[in-house]
Length: 257
Image 1 (cartoon, helix red, strand yellow):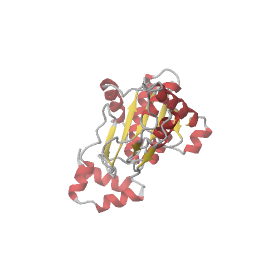
Image 2 (cartoon, one colour):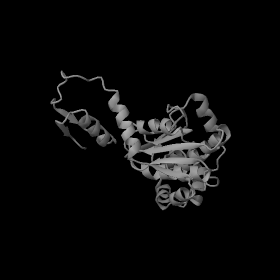
Image 3 (tube, rainbow, N blue to C red):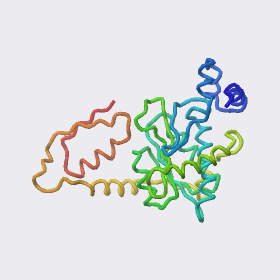
Image 4 (cartoon, helix red, strand yellow):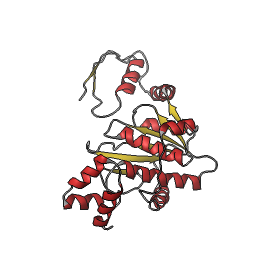
């Protein structure tokens, strides 16, 4: 990939003022690193530094990946395909999730969007509960805060296989990042019946399933033990506190970063 050509392409075609200014402020070395290749897509989906360029996580790259995944679904799923989308507390996670939702809906894919940020496993759980074709989670797991990512799960709620990732990548590589994705609004998607929000009832099911996996039963369990918990930069505070409280553990100190 000719990074200088790509730089000029981005400079003259993007409409996002924040990303445009970032491009203009780049050094030559920064331009090369941001645009010398496409961000890699594999069994773990996408993961990269947030910013402008083909080798960065931004709304254009997210839209391109979503458009490619939509084409894969339309060619491989009988009937209407569907996707569950979740997002965590990382920078721009909500924005990226909404962009993905709009692209999928615009391509006729039914979208189930979590109504608030949640832990990664809730997407896997909801995919199975709703019998969705795939799941998408906007997260970069343990990577530093300047990263974000785009994880894809199959209909079984598991991470996609190497073969499926390769097929999705083939579709992504066909996409013109500035021409093909024409995402409309979330309101439009909802009006068309292509977008539904996942509410607290699904979270209740998820938490009940988590609680049922406990191996600590009986009168010998000391429920008064002192517990210190920190969600760090994650999204586990609400579900962890609920499960502990419902299990009878009430001596909990929360340390928030």
